[in-house]
Length: 287
Image (tube, rainbow, N blue to C red):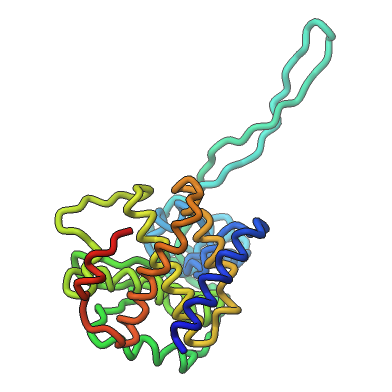
């Protein structure tokens, strides 16, 4: 059963990538830091600049909404790019031209905890767990610790052997939560006490060939586990968009999907409890 699903997923990924009608990859989780007035999440570097999750507003917005800033409150900075028209003079034709460019601006905001007289407007999304998807993670006997401390990023730390993912309610859908969790779980199978994909002393940096190949393995493995749990139809387009970005990083080598899928199958089987450790045959195969 699993092998048929694996084959289907690999074939479907290749088919969709050949169509070349792939939307850009979308981050499947939602930042917890939002603008109080618009309820829109802050994005990009602003998620790093803001220290806490929750709602933020400017001093003027506090006054406009009838709130009061608590004494001793400290502001934080968010940035934005503002489009600007610049007028230039064409002296030969005696005409004025307009050039468009953007300038970096910032403004100071306060957390709602520092404001008196205003109630939170933030309504958390409720995504119900999917039992079949939960069962897969439960089968991962020696899985690393899974945490939800950082609500703005997902990662596996091979030094501490810990996974962090935003909570299920911080994802757009429950299906995308499990796809994210599976991606990091596949990464964790590379640990030296599991399938030993990571080499001792290897320095892997973002964008390197080793990093890119590991991302292919993790995303294909995640798609395979989504297939086993019956949610792949809700996640595969984003899987393919993510894979396409890394294939381009590796100069669109079409053989990489097949090579990565072999490693991804082993990782998925490990999580499902079908293999306990890396066999000599597995050690002999490289990617």
